[in-house]
Amino acid sequence: MAGLILGTLGLLGAHGGSLTEPPAVSLLKIPVAGSRHKPPVKFSHRVHQARRVSCTQCHHEYQGRRNVWHEGQRVEKCQACHGLRPEARRLDVKNAYHRQCKGCHLQLRQQGRQAGPIECQGCHRPA
Image (cartoon, rainbow, N blue to C red; front, top):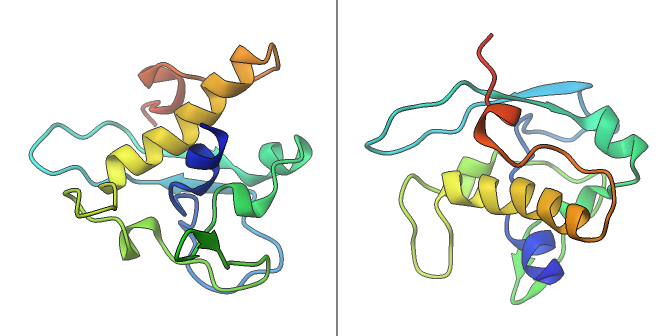
């Protein structure tokens, strides 16, 4: 499951472009086809960096089954590859975000480690 979680999507690339230092906080707006929208998610790069989450656990570019993205390369928005609807061998953007973020948080909890939220309102907070 770890491989699936770690390599499912480049969902945190909400800042598009080449960066040496990511923004402290990114506002992630998840487009959803045909359903109500929840408030955007405030994602803290600093919190994840402090917990030693490597960039490649979220950011990726797959060639075959191998992640060839490396820190310092351009970061694309998730929507560059993940659309509003799932495609062959590619999750839609909503499920890509949820599988990556919530999946990692659940895995950490199962290991008895401190983890981020897993309930909707834990991430989707009104401004």
